[in-house]
Image (cartoon, rainbow, N blue to C red; front, side, top):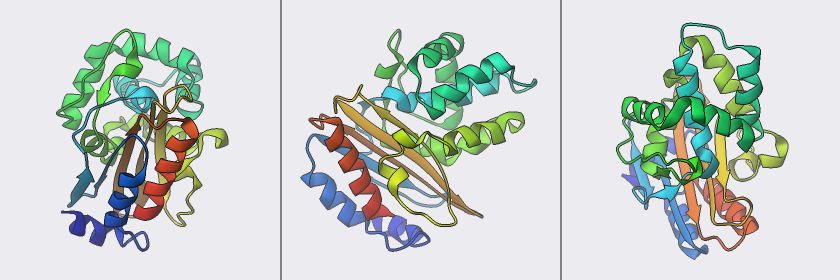
Length: 232
């Protein structure tokens, strides 16, 4: 399967999935990644569960906008959704989480075909995610967003603030639209994650890189960038 994924990723440049696997094995802590196209899938530790941290905010965005699919979003709602995604603001997330709830997240996970997702309450960042499920979700994230709010939701994922554009955000990917969300354990290195959808015309690639017990946030960011660079 990894060879098939590598062939699909050749659309991006000169990927080396095996090199990403070998690099991940040298990094501190635990590293998982998954790569998915419409026709191929491969991964390393792709079914290992991690605390979601702020990666969950992409699911909250989709779940919330789906609940408002038949109306325009109000200004007060956008004042929560915008910082939740672009700045990873936790206060805004707390409000959105109370409105979506674990039931709303479960409904979204079922719709997206996420078999191993487990929401947590009251600490939403302890929700359990896997690289396999996250690539399934992100590959379809634009279609999961309701048509009325699709452009808005994708714009938020495309315009994460510069201070949080590490890992995938440091790569030059000409001609590709890059939609991503990261999560990190309050800068401790407990977890450092990024999940991304890459789109160029009809070409689509979703990648999730999840890490735990990195030792430091700097080490976690280095792992993310190293894995993405070897893949892309």
